[in-house]
Structures are given as C-alpha cells and as structure tokens.
Image (cartoon, rainbow, N blue to C red; front, side, top):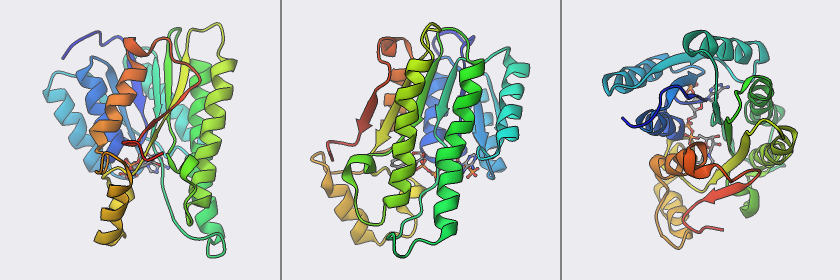
Length: 246
Ligand SMILES: NC(=O)c1ccc[n+]([C@@H]2O[C@H](COP(=O)([O-])OP(=O)(O)OC[C@H]3O[C@@H](n4cnc5c(N)ncnc54)[C@H](OP(=O)(O)O)[C@@H]3O)[C@@H](O)[C@H]2O)c1
C-alpha cells in the first residue's frame, strides 16, 4: 500500500461491481475507504476484510442513497471514524431498460430515486462537508451520447448527473475541490450482464473499436486518476471510459 491514509474516500455502491473495484484501487493507492452499500451487507463486509487484510483502513456504511437522512448518517459515520471526508465517488446506480412506451412509473421512479436523487443527496452532503482539496467523481454512462432505444430513463438520470457535475464544479470555487464524472461504456458487471442473451452481450462487446467489454478495473483506473494527485488540474469534465464506443 502506498501513500497517505489521511485522505478519506466514500465510495457509494461498493458492495460489488465497479464500486468494489474502485474501493480496492483507492485503498491500494493509500486512501482510507468507506464502503457504502444498500442491501448486500455480506459482500460489503467481505470487501472490508480483504482491504483490511491488505493493510488498508476501511469501514462499511449501509445507506440507501435515495434517503437523505441515511446519506447524512453515512457522512457522520465517516467523520466519526476518520475525522473528515476528502473524496466522494458517486457510483451507486441501477439500470432498468424499456422503451418509453413500455416504461411504467415504477421503472421511472426507481431510477430517478437512486441515480438522480441519490446522487443529489450525496453531492449535497459532500458540498457542505468535503475538506479543502477534496475530489468528487460521479459515475455517468456513455449512453449519454449513444442514446440507444430502451435507455431513455436511465440515460436521462445520467444526463442529470452530468449536469450537476458541471454546476457543482463551479459552485465549489474557492475550496480547491474538483468535480468530474466518469462515463463507462458496457462493463462486465451484474448491472450490464443480467438478463441479456449471450449474443446481445457479444455484439455490444464488439461495438467498441477495442472489441471487448470494459472490466470494473478499467473504470477504477480512471476514477483513481481523477481522485489522485495526477488528476489535480481536471475539473468540471466528463471522461468517457469505453474503449472508443463513442
Ligand atoms: N456496468 C456497466 O456497463 C455500466 C456502464 C455505465 C455506467 N455504469 C454505472 O456504474 C455504476 C456502477 O454500476 P455496476 O455495473 O457496478 O452495478 P452493480 O454491479 O449492479 O452494482 C451496483 C452497486 O450499487 C449499489 N446500490 C444500488 N442501489 C443503491 C442505493 N439506493 N443506495 C446505495 N447503494 C446502492 C449496490 O449495492 P447493494 O447491492 O448492496 O444494494 C451495488 O453495490 C452505476 O452508477 C452504473 O449506472 C455501469
């Protein structure tokens, strides 16, 4: 483990997938890490044990990010355990696909609640609490740009996340806090793979000129860059991490 564990990073939705890869990578880079999750306590605790065994400083913090009170409690827990928060990685998200004609209110409301309101809840706390020199990395998606059929509501929530990224970067003037977004393309996690026939997965994997799916670690590399010392001069940007799909 390298670096300085005095920097504290909250990673939302880190019980699996891209968030778990980000948490592992930030811990390896020397960050103290708060592993947020909504439901998968056993997976989150297993990741805590793994990072702990590798010499990292880490806790798990359950909070449904769509609940503002739970998000405030998660920041409180981080501050109580480690004295403050420097980095927020807004990774938790859900994806439900249907044409607009076939989208019911539950599909719309759940994605807005987690992806858009959830990101707003964590950004609001971070805007109030992040220490001088902090970083925020939001997870968008390359579907903002691809605009494929069935992605309307999901893409709309991520477009909202990108809009908040640009606005918050300006609102935090004077605190040396950079706010950026990473927008992955198709990445091999349950969110992407579940429910898709193998041939659809293979054709989506071939869309990028690099001709493969992204791996969670590919995305974690980009987040670590933006959260770490080499990302210091990047602010208010959306970095698409997708093998060249768009
Ligand atoms: N995979 C892709 O192809 C892809 C592409 C572009 C963008 N993204 C974005 O990347 C992010 C991570 O996606 P992923 O593929 O890693 O998904 P994933 O494997 O389904 O993992 C999602 C994580 O988010 C957590 N989560 C869900 N709802 C939550 C809530 N209300 N409060 C707190 N945590 C919650 C889950 O925790 P529990 O399971 O413990 O509830 C889980 O740890 C998402 O924002 C997604 O939109 C993914």
